[in-house]
View 1 (tube, rainbow, N blue to C red):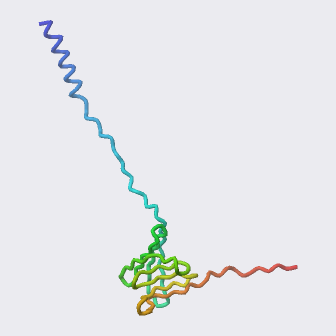
View 2 (view 1 turned 30 degrees about the vertical axis):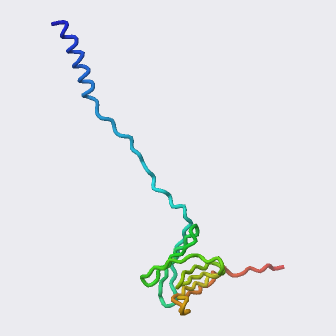
Length: 129
């Protein structure tokens, strides 16, 4: 009986040690969302008639997305034209020295035009001698 007692106690000890262990937590793998490294600028312009145009320019991909009157227009930057000008087969957007124009090319119809006023600085100070 003494010979059986020792292996039974030893067996119960091993079983109780393995049974009491809680399953370990799985290592959490955190996958970070890929960062958007594109250089994007977004502007909303309102003309004198109250029409609003939303312009999103992606300088990395050289594209412009225009939202006007519930429609979206995707344009590609044109290097041949001055300042920032983007166009596709039908439409052209230009921002030349604050003069913003969006037009339909084949009929030369201006859909949106805004001439931004230049920011005025304070009164000029003159030196007195």
